[in-house]
Amino acid sequence: MSTATQAANQTLIHIEQLNLYYGTYHALKNVNLTIPEKAVTAFIGPSGCGKSTLLRTLNRMNDMIDGTRIEGLVSMGGTDIYSSDVDVETLRKKVGMVFQQPNPFPKSIYDNIAYGPRLHGIKSKSQLDEIVEQSLKQAVLWDEVKDYLKRSAFSLSGGQQQRLCIARALAVNPDVLLMDEATSALDPISTLKIEELVQELKNKYTIVMVTHNMQQAARTSDQTVFFLNGEMVEFDQTETLFSNPSDKRTEDYITGRFG
Image (tube, rainbow, N blue to C red; front, side, top):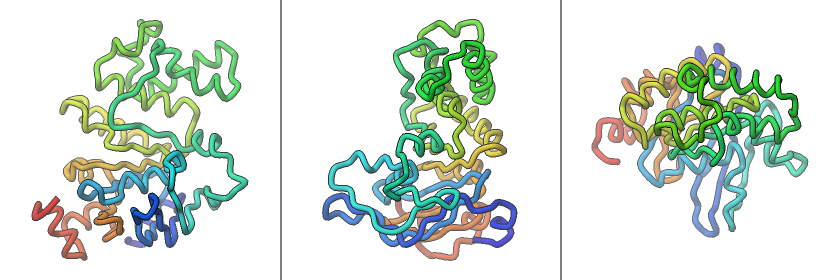
């Protein structure tokens, strides 16, 4: 990782000697990684290489899987997020997540966005109105839905639903936005809109994205991490990793020799 990038963005997430097991299966092997704030970091690699597993360690979603065991350190803003005194609900408020398939709630567009703030104690209608408008504007969806906020979220197109899910994640003012293959179910035009949105959002949020699409990683990320068989093979500025990888396995993957 180049020192220039690290100097430009302070480290927000620090991962040290991380090993993760599902039962006896060793899914992540000795991962050491620093993720800078207010930048886009992409995880790439073939299916089953551990990239989504690592993403889910950042908001402790792996806790929900029986038999999961974690060794090592995952810290965010200097706090060990696996410490016994960390409240997982508070952590997930700080670390929003957008999934592969759009998953709006079976509620109105308005209530999808207001759900999180209400859960965290905001009751004022004027305050909720402001949060809904601001979140939809950040997700570049406001102009398309502002006259239809009482309509079901399911009335939106797939691409609009995914932007609604991004707005819903932003409504609770997170520090980090995790995106797990967030455009793989979308058409090319919707994908482009999400990629443009990511470039806007990184001015305020730290974004970590998993993608199978190497062109997407090259277009949208500042840093890229390449995983293979549960191991982190290489981490560098995206331009460097794609143009001059230091590991032969990285070169073989990005040139299509496997994966």
